[in-house]
Length: 458
Image (tube, rainbow, N blue to C red; front, side):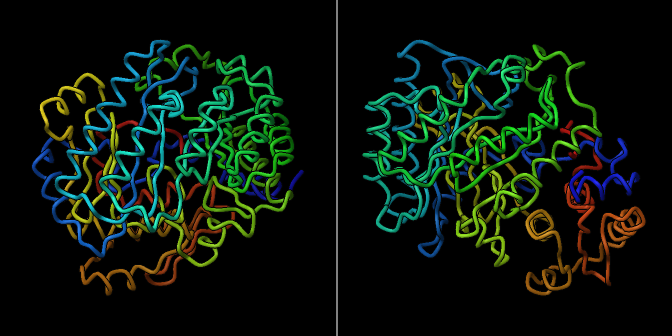
């Protein structure tokens, strides 16, 4: 039994279902997306675009909501298609949206670009290049630090490989999830190790050396041994980064998940054991833990950011991207400004209608008040550093806050061994780290309203 699992075993109060089963957000933003509202719309988006300062660092996110086939576990905003017409039409709308945004924010320097989905490579070589040419014509890419894309190892043909190399992709994230044939059948994603290995070799041969792998625990039919074996096999591919996400079973939100037999899902205790087994496996393999579910080689920028206290949290998870502005393009894409968040229409038809009318596709968002910004930073530091000095943040932001009710809840968690508190300094214990989302949720003023359902804490 590994040290971390053993530690959990001698602290049964930490692994009880009332903690592991507690539903809390993942805190890739604050306020979280379920708390966005239609009170923030197109006018706000346009004004915030116009208000971007030349000193603001900018990242771009492009969402491609298509896959050839859907996986049963997927919680992303995506649809299946085998036809080229909707994909090519969507690419044209992305180009139009980029042009529309550029009228308010064009010419600014961009530090990072990230293509997500769905399966971004489904755009095909020509459309990928057309969209990128549009970006490069409207934005200054001379200081571009990173150009990343999410890839399905099963969908990497020669034309797409040549195209992503040609547009300067520097980092590729491969969705793997689990390498057990039994688990792959249960989640509707058959993907043998040899397919992943071949994709990695081809990417490196094309000059894309920075490769990450996404894995999951908590999947149907999955065991602790499956998690450990996936880690061992993937380590042979020498990825620089690994994300180990907990499967979020939210069939009320993603109907495709109703195809998963809930009786085959691991219970709270087994999920925690899987998460701890994955953590120990990657640490034993020489990777550094980054936050609650990422791992990176010691020399990787993500590991360095974590060690230096510069780790951030955004809709892609943990990141070393310190950009103050993220511009989202495409269906459901979220933009982040200093003033707040905006999100595009989640339905592709509504998104296209807005762009065709030369309007922003903004459907909802959130205006950030000073108290929101204060709470967001507290939550982010807890999620990234497992500790926070509230007084330091309050003084720097000059936003008075008492937090007496929140600190009383922190003391309750302290009694359970999750945290330690010295005045208004909070540190998460080693045993409490798997439950840091619960600790962070103490400062979420919207959560108490109970308007949204969330995934398990672990």
